[in-house]
Amino acid sequence: MRVARSAFLMALLICIAGCNDGIPPVGNYASITGRVVDATTGAGIVNATVAVNGATLTQQTDSNGNFRFAPVPTGDWDYSASADGYATVPLVTNAPPLNPGETRTLTISLTHG
Image 1 (cartoon, rainbow, N blue to C red):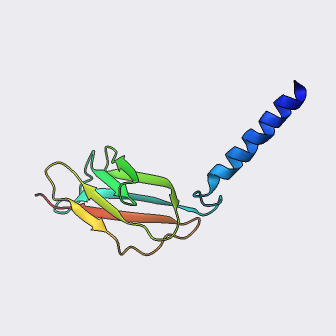
Image 2 (image 1 turned 135 degrees about the vertical axis):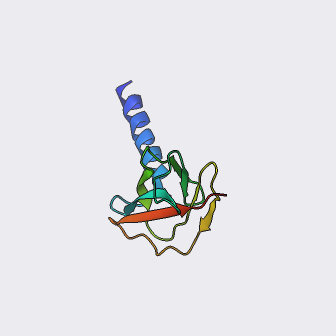
Image 3 (image 1 turned 30 degrees about the horizontal axis):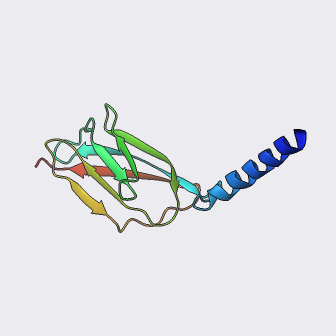
């Protein structure tokens, strides 16, 4: 019984260890913070949706228009933003790559649409 349990646990650990192929090692992440604002007034937009990496990561802004994504894989990335009553910021794909440990800060301006 004890040998069977040990063999099962060892097999389980091997399976779990093999599941991490697509996850970058610890320390290879960055974070993105920022604010979505009205282009005319500069006021933060509440409940705007910010999407990072093709909408893999999405978040609603807080009562001041702020958002934060962490952890974000490093390297190439993209973002977009939208809010009710505003024109959508289409997918921005030319942002400089994210570096490990970096915190990138964005201000995204939306115009009434």
